[in-house]
Length: 164
Image: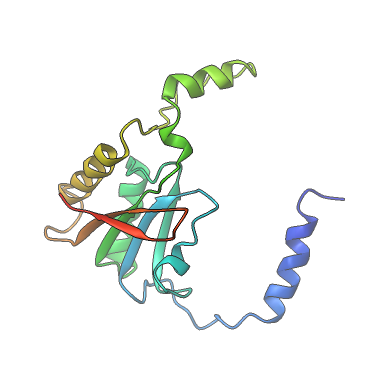
């Protein structure tokens, strides 16, 4: 038995009822959402979206890393994105540790992660504001691209907008 048999079985059912073959790679609603990989977040459900409406970029902490910027450039110039929302969340594991903590945990397993930056979030509000500025001032993205931020509350499902 494979570690993925349950997923392959579920995919058989999913593909049998699949109805999204007509979707293109474009973001039908022109939206890109940068959010956390936390499994409590349903990015489409949060905004009442459906498959094909938005580009969803997920990573630990919803941080705007170099790779997120690279992906946003592709999303804007190739895939119809004309607005970006950065959405971290409450009770995030990345706000409960430091990079040094993570390096220490990995070292306990004999793994040296010091060449990695984990972008932990000691101050979530400050990190979100920093990331919004990073997108807004990127020389690779169009000037005036609408960029917003909001913190998703994992206990209530509500968004709290954050203004710069």
